[in-house]
Length: 164
Image (cartoon, rainbow, N blue to C red; front, top):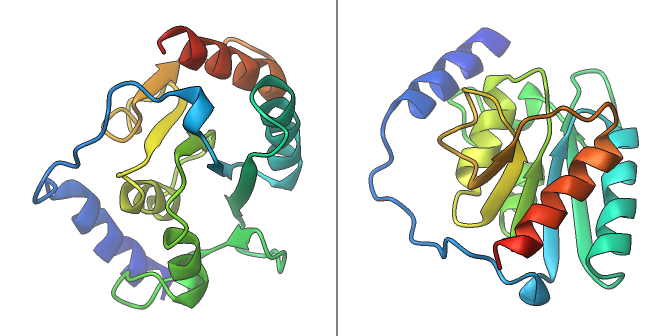
């Protein structure tokens, strides 16, 4: 039944948004209290969290999630966390209700489920690495020339601070 969910999410992602969200082009790094990370795996979430706490503030709340169909980890989500018609179930609704100030999006292998989750959090400021598919959803993008995620995230935070 994964294909049915993908079909509905794909059609939702292809439709233009009804109303564009109003958000500040600049995000003051002093006002960041909560950051949501959508990453490739749990190790990447931990590495990004270290960079956030060292480069921004130790008191920032970090919520990390990654797509994995086989994992039973609390931070993992899969197509099973969506209804047959592509609506988020309770686990994702709790995540969406947190309304983070900043989203860091790093998945290299994109799927409709991670993109849809990013679209649902469109009111938050979002940044990540350049990819043609994520272009409509991210406010700040960098080419991922760095070999590891920590140095890439450090560069993202550096540039976020510079534009403020």
